[in-house]
Image (cartoon, rainbow, N blue to C red; front, side):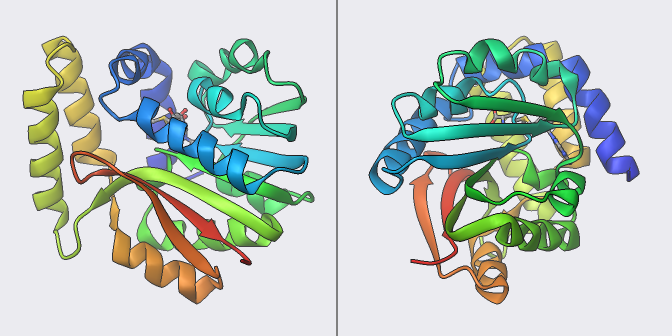
Length: 237
Ligand SMILES: C[S@@+](CC[C@H](N)C(=O)[O-])C[C@H]1O[C@@H](n2cnc3c(N)ncnc32)[C@H](O)[C@@H]1O
């Protein structure tokens, strides 16, 4: 396991409660994004489907998006127990088989013998290097059924925006707009983002997805602050 991943494991174990405050205040637009995810699933997956969530954390928002869908089985994978320990409670109302694993997500995909109709990764890919992200997208493609979809929610930089420009823009937004988060917590969040976030642009994602063989890349949520976005990467349409 690389050093970057080990650092993230420690960060998320200590910081889960700060993250809960941020998402409860909708600062990362979870409520809006997951409403769209719910609608996407209901519209496109009417038959029983298998669902894999990578970096699932406590599955609080995915569980809501999966209510009243045709899901037949849910698999959740996360490195850290900080969120994962809370996932069974959040998933209890989903009427399907639930399996949770504490594992690094690329290792899980590499050794996985199953395939899935839907894979979700939400706010967990941006910690990887560009090379690791491309390998990860290929691994997801390999683990999707023929009509499968990868739902990718994350932070994105603008086309041509450098990492320092992106960090100044996003951290500046957090420092001025996340006003209900205590300043000590803001410092921790900004410190973490400044050393661990490596967002890609939409055009880079589209280029990689096309190279791997995804048939279509749909932007399904375009956030209010030009950072939080959700895409559906469709294997076969
Ligand atoms: C920002 S939280 C997002 C949680 C949830 N998916 C959401 O959208 O609210 C990132 C989660 O991804 C997990 N994570 C980060 N890198 C990971 C990796 N390489 N393998 C597995 N889990 C990872 C963290 O432990 C954490 O629970």
